[in-house]
Image (tube, rainbow, N blue to C red; front, side, top):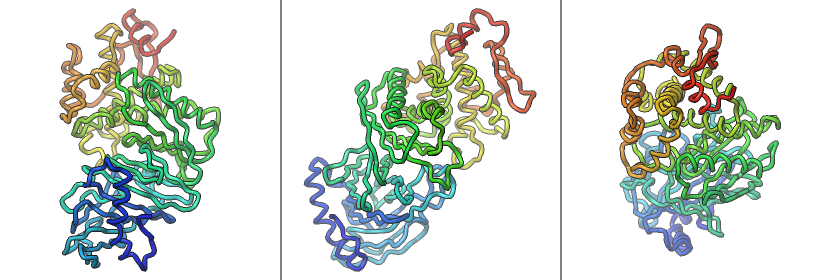
Length: 487
């Protein structure tokens, strides 16, 4: 063990960390010397973290907000540090998640409270521990900065001490001693708990694994089958094979939080998926498939791109629409359900004021209540797809822009909005599209747009209805047929 966690001997524990850390470096000889070495000891609703940075430091800064979840820094408690000579270093708390010492420290320790989030929507975004399982995300468990070093730019060597009967699962393969080399701590997720099950396969040169806990209507192999089917579709759509193992972490929504069927986030190579364990068997696989069409696409966009900047309008809004098309193509939904989904999104969009461009909405995503990047982004993607199909006589679509994105310079750290808008302007019919729908504060009016494409919209009742027109031209029929319409 790197540490004993008896609080009485904590000073000695911190002092001996450097010697024990050498054992990790011997095991992982290829890990660079600047790695942050960490041990996490789990107990009910909290963990104790012991750490040794590559360089002595006297300041530590923790994340205080993520995805609209505030006050993360308040979870940090009992911060302690040890100086170069083995003495206790006096540490002052400057603000939530901000600590400083007057002297350099070679090792430090702290506790993180991990109760269930009060809002169900936060369950997939931040770390928490329930009685028999939980999710640990290094982004909110480790300092963002230690002294002058940014943790995200370092490798982390992490070891877990878990309760009896618990195991740890991740997209990162551990050593025989369950020690993990984490090269991208910002994206690292660990599922911990009783009786974790692994089911894996390789397809299209990509490795995918289901890491599950809990009891479900279908076997893990069936869940893996539908996930693999969706992954294969996206590999074909983008022309890009994921280079690393992808893991779907499947766990039950805690009973006190199961006010919705599911909560999810895709981070790095991990799809975090929390589902209501009371799901009905006959709806289980279709619903799971629809969820996968959105979440698994995030393994490609944005997680496999190196683009920089705020472009949530594309990787959320456009991805929602492209996922809807894939669900239709895989026969997870019908064409009528496709139209109904667009109608529901339009109703949602009309329920609040739209006073931002999509670029502005992306920059303010977590500071505004209106879901513009989702609703407006999806509706703009829908219109763009119609324009592209009409211009090409149904031979091209939005999907072709995804393939172009991965075959262009998207692997470089370029401005995302410039790259994607450039791709969207790639034809005569779409040259002015980004200016009209993405970069300026224009509102969406489907009533004016859809008739040209053979679609009718009725907004006079309590909910919007979309339908196919009674008299279609040959061009309109080809367009709608390319979407999945069958008469």
